[in-house]
Image (cartoon, rainbow, N blue to C red; front, side, top):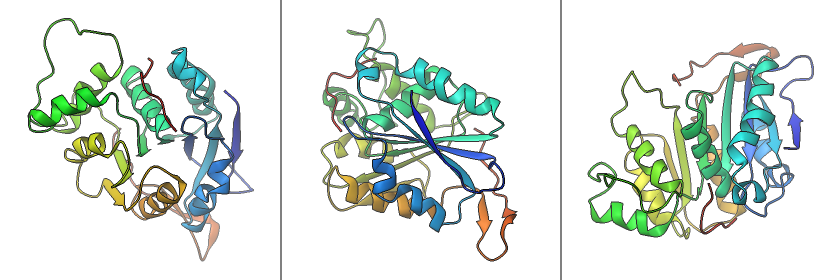
Length: 249
């Protein structure tokens, strides 16, 4: 995977890295054009930013998880980053989730903006059961091997977190008119207070940019002192940490 780094400071590397994963058919440089990089700097977040060219073909050929892990996560850990967060839009949000599902404990936090959360029939099944808290995953062999059949039972662990299973903090943002909003609401119901952000509108950059700016006000990330400059930092305690049938941006 090709990557492009935006450093928080000119004199040294930050301890935290934000990895941006684009949606299908979106260009990595759009994170800069649409204000994601500047928003981090305007909020004085002490984190480097890595924009990843995770194009949609990696999801079709089912190599996304291994590519992200071997091309991005492992090399960046070796460079000394103590905390790595994945920030994914649409299919990129889906990618962030399935990476943690397959590689548990390798990431310190996840931000998903309008994520693709699998096929609508599974979401309808969960809604019919009364939501993710009440839903019971079907027993026995699954009718197919699509990853959303594993993802939703995994997401259920956010309902009752246990010390024995480390789940990274997960933040969700979506537009109320988004075409995936039905599934977003199912996930939103089980996330902790302050971890869900909504806005008017649908599935496009204006909504994602606004949600990102709002989230930066509360994400548990270290910040630079706006007065004293990069030499002084306020440390924030971090919380412990396929192939979709329909792919859209």
